[in-house]
Length: 100
Image (cartoon, rainbow, N blue to C red; front, top):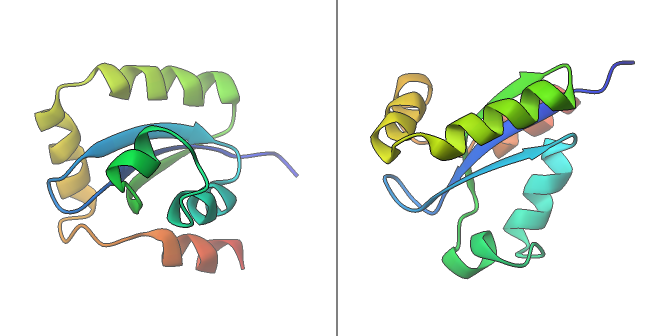
């Protein structure tokens, strides 16, 4: 089975603080973020809502996309989220249903 890699955006709340990350196990990473086990930025700013994610087949593609998104203007990231998740729902539960 091929490993999937995820580029994701977390938010503290609607239009709040944003964080862009990459992982090969998004469900596990979200559990860690929500339990505030991840030291640093997300823990300090309470950034725990999964509001956007993309799936890639290679870590190189995922890291390139993460790097690109981190350089984007905030307004572009907000539009990306709003276009696919206009209610700013926490997508973590949908992740769990995808895995099961």
